[in-house]
Length: 83
Image (tube, rainbow, N blue to C red):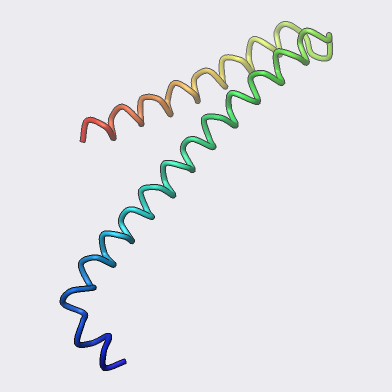
């Protein structure tokens, strides 16, 4: 415990940088997972339509929702890159 307190001025900033890196990685992974999930849902929707499980009207409505969600994620990514 005493050693940790004595080395805190040196290890503190390093541990802080590591923590920030982990937070960035976690958030990026979450966003990637969200985008991949939406793309998988879009693929499943296309398959359901091709198999005749859903009507064209249902397909069009659900496809539009998924595409808008994907577009919103991409816009968020662009905004974060610009900041």
